[in-house]
Length: 274
Image (cartoon, rainbow, N blue to C red; front, side, top):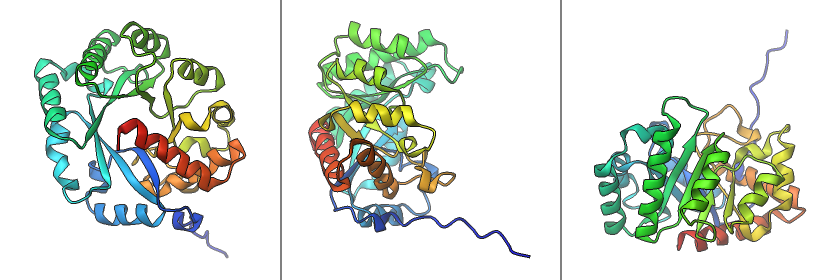
């Protein structure tokens, strides 16, 4: 009787990508990485990831986690109150975030901020108030914004238009739509971030969107520990797996993987002023 063999997972370093990629959105301060952060960062470098944006979900997380990266110049920071935490956002939260941005040059963007109607824990009106407050903060600080939007496009886009963000530096995090949604973002001058689900066999609509998005408007992300690409689906995601997302983007656009790898990295560096 034969036993089921464990699934063999491809080594991301075997993709042969040059050192220079940028993971624009990771959550390496979360508990999932606590026991092996140095190893995770080493694997990222071996797989060609030179720079990582770590997203702190609120000022408490930032204060607790920034020291993890004290000697890691390859990691830059984002800070924002996630829409599912909007109920606890108040003027003191905004004040703490504003102070952090003014004191720490590693903080490059306000995010992830936005609306999330998939989870029902926070009323839309509360989310919208927090969203608008953080957009105003970003304007005051002259910082780019990174948007989280889940099942809330119908509210998020009009709010962003009303707040004057068409044409301002904005990155749509974890894009999962099709060509029509991509065009709405592109028409406003924004960048679009592609996550691991672009590799999922049934996600043809997202790959079709990637085909229509100009390369100069694309960046890549893992959103780790979430949304592992197909090659590592079911396992904790990490920055070293970014190359599999890049491969799917390159295939969709008919380009060499090294070209999309380095071009999306340059886009991220420009957007975040790295």
